[in-house]
Amino acid sequence: MELLDKLKWRYAAKAMNGNKVPQEKLDNIIEAISLAPTSSGLQPFEVFVITNQDVKEKIKPIAWNQSVITDCSHLLVFTAWDTYTADRINKMFDLTNTIRGFENEGWENYRQMLLSSYPQKDSEENFNHAAKQAYIAFSQAITAAAFEGVDSTPVEGFDPTALDEILDLRKKGLRSCVMLPLGYRDTDNDWLAGLKKVRKSKEDLITEIL
Ligand SMILES: Cc1cc2nc3c(=O)[nH]c(=O)nc-3n(C[C@H](O)[C@H](O)[C@H](O)COP(=O)(O)O)c2cc1C
Image (cartoon, rainbow, N blue to C red; front, top):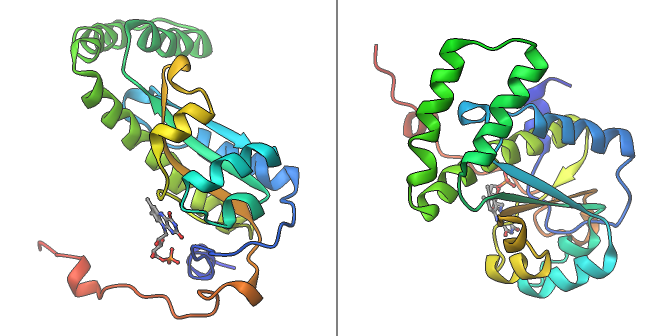
């Protein structure tokens, strides 16, 4: 199947059947998350992969009781840094130098530029910037899941403060952004399965400037 066919096959499943996603497919989805582009390459997010049923049960009531939270195979929770710190920025720049095996003046100047701006900014502004990066990876995970023939449901319908508490995120300097249950559609119990996709027209979406 071509990528576009797979994207047409994908929909936000409202019911899942509890079947398990094989480890290899999960690994590919996680690698796609890791390969997502991020601003300055900082990857200012962490993803929690939850298979523990008790934890899923705890999350469900603070997520509008959506059944996919407990009936999915793996529940991915995308979290973002609560702010940018010098330590976090340095870690990623140091990692780049280690992996590439050399230091570069331009890159070090760029590090200093980020160090003199991000950490001084308001933490809410920094979190929002970090969250945008998490959403890019989240989108990539949705596409990768479809590519693997795995269903997913983007879930923003939850109380982030409550989720932060359940996963003890604030102590780790993280805040929840969005969740992505992965699994397999339960077509018999999903009102959305089989309904036509609704998208606005190309004319309403695209403005060509020739
Ligand atoms: C950021 C985001 C949050 C969403 N939150 C929910 C959600 O909490 N529950 C849900 O059933 N669908 C949720 N959706 C799914 C959208 O409703 C769905 O993607 C949209 O209606 C388009 O339909 P399709 O994905 O089936 O093509 C969310 C989608 C996105 C991108």
